[in-house]
Image (cartoon, rainbow, N blue to C red):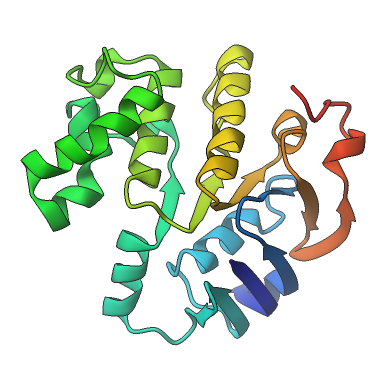
Length: 235
């Protein structure tokens, strides 16, 4: 579903060239959760922005569903993000004054209108355990509930590819495990390709495969099944 071929992204800092992403090659298949693990400043967020089409690489190809998004027009990229890509945003990024169901249905509203979008998103919110919280404002929700709203928004368009940049950074341990288990289950059931960027060992422990990114370069594959971070796959 997602394939990166020799992707490079450079920046000039103080007259020096920094390769935030340095000839990265990787794949994420349908129904697979891949964790991109690495410390802050390793290039993880830049890589997510490239896959989302928010930045353009200096070289290389980014194929999503067999199509190279590099070189797409702004209009094509907008459509790609709206209809083909899901992005799980951090809970703190959601508008606090909006109602949960309004926020979760934002992508659908642009295509279906508000009433139809709310009808469309309601079953997914029920599946995510938000049936009694749909009418609440985001500010009235717990951090775990806000993250579930973000997941509903990301999945609302039935995307083939979902990106999650530090999806549990604002959550406590209990909510972290709940959200990770939910993401992994939905990844399987809905046959999505899910790329999770994290520096948290517990998050990496939920993945089918773990790749380490350090100084923009992708290291050897790590196997989550054997628990390289001490986290059993069955958590």
